[in-house]
Length: 77
Image (cartoon, rainbow, N blue to C red):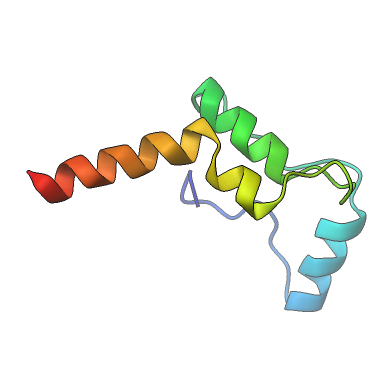
């Protein structure tokens, strides 16, 4: 979504789920993505559920916090 292009093109949802769960290589994060965004996406893409960040942890990540602050400022302005 970030680039407007699909990362994986598959015919159906089952193929996509299989690729996400079993592919050894994560999708490439574009080089023009900020470091804080890159860190957020890397934490989302950790395959091991024990070490992957939870949704609560992700909501506290600086990338999300910055986006929330920016949205609040736009709503106030």
